[in-house]
Amino acid sequence: MKKLLLSALVLCNTAFAGINIKQSSENPLFYYGICKIAKDRHDIKTAYEFCKEAVKRMPDTPAVYRETIFLAYSIGKKEEAFELLKTYKERFKNDPETYLFISFFYNVTKNQKEALAALEEGYKKFPNNEKIISALVDQYIENKNLNKAKELLEKLATIKKDDPSIYYKIARIYLFENNAQKAEEYLKKSLQIDKKYKPAWQLLGEIYRQSGNYDKAIEIYKNILKDDPNNLEALNRLFQIYVDKDDFNNAAETIDKIIRLNPKDNDAILKKFLLYIKYGKSNEILQDLKKSSQENPDNPFLKFMLGMAYETLEDYQNAKAIYEELYKQQPDNQELIDRLVSVYLNLKEYDKALEILNKLYVQNPKDYKILLSMADIEDKKGNVKRALELVKEAESIAPDDPTVHFIKAIYLDKLGNWQEAEKSLYKSLELRPDYPDVLNYLGYTYIDREMNIDKGIELVKKALEKMPDSPAYLDSLGWGYYKKGNYTEAEKLIKKALEKMPDDPVLNEHYADILLKLNKKQDAIEYYKKALELIDKKGEGEPNQKERVLKKLKDLR
Picture 1 (tube, one colour):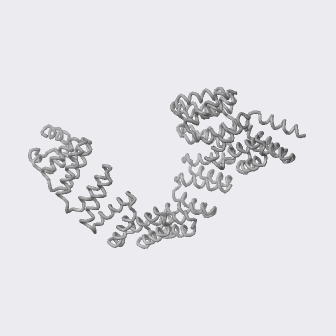
Picture 2 (cartoon, rainbow, N blue to C red; picture 1 turned 30 degrees about the vertical axis):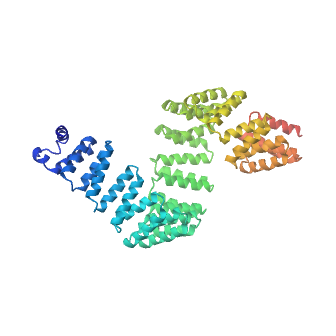
């Protein structure tokens, strides 16, 4: 102790400057003070030794015990900590705080059973103590003993009649039990006590929203706004209700008010953008963002959103100009990089996209997903071999990522190496057996190339179990039935797929093939023509598709 005392006094010489050390060391508070200072300076062992000495000199001070118990536990002296806890309980058994502390300590040390037992013992001794009842309620809720929690809360409500949080907690329990009606009843009781009690009106409004009772939710939020017109929480919730109600005008008015109150709220700006896009008002939001950007030239987020508005209108040149300007200021902004690369791809400026991704990869050499993005661009450029090289580099970084093996298989297949492609597909499924895209790709290939149509259908059906509404998977299954000669079933499936994805050139071609088999020649011709239009606009859905469709049309003349 002498050695520790010396080191602690050196440590704390500034704090104790001018103090008679001999006299101070005889004062029990001196040891507790050194303990606290050492703890604040993260010297836990020294803190423990001085607190331990303080316990001997101040045996009737519960705070010293509590400090020492935690210090002992934190330096690995667990048996000593629990022994001190036992002494602490015996010495201060008539103090409600004792049972609260013991429960807290057991919770911190991951011993919920003992934590609950301590509170239940405290409750028996102090049945009307608000703190013990509240802590015991929380413990019961944690242990999923909801009936006991409700029982205690009802009792607490008779003790603390003006506390809205009690009824709120009861409501939460009923909600956990899927009893929304009782939850609503208790939330209303909570709001009768305090109509501004935030947790209660928030939860009640959300209950109404989720049940589709929008008018009641609106009433809740408008009542809050009567007393506090600028309450942003209520305004944001009101905005969401209007969106859910499909009420554009009120939603727009509400989000405008939110932005006026907080012009730097980027989340609100994004919400407004998405609202206008949802209702096909791209030109309106473009003009709005132009004006806002001019009024707030130092807000880069507004410029970014303006770029997105241009993208929505397929004005990629203006979008590019904005993103390039922002990129000079924020070269590490991942979201901005994603948008700029996307614009470059739409403009077929592939080398610029690759330049940005190369820089990003140099900064993040372990991020193999950048390599996959670069591979996709090389594929678009027609450099499939280079794309495959990049994917193999990604594989060396992430050999257990099933997507890497899937993409590798696609490029191997494009290069005519089906044997190796098939191995990569099965490797992907080994890593992720229910990978629907891989199941569909493998199944469709077996079907389309007539390698194993029945096996292909089986694989596509497994994919559809995971994503039953996928138009691509429906097309694959329909194509399987087509290959089996079941044209009626094929027509049903591919028609359903077309309804979901009408602008896909392969789907239109497949549908035309089926119509031809069903002796609907004129309809087939129309769908072949549509497939050609889509190929000219979007590119081929499969290699050599344009040549194939042109030949089919020629044969029908």
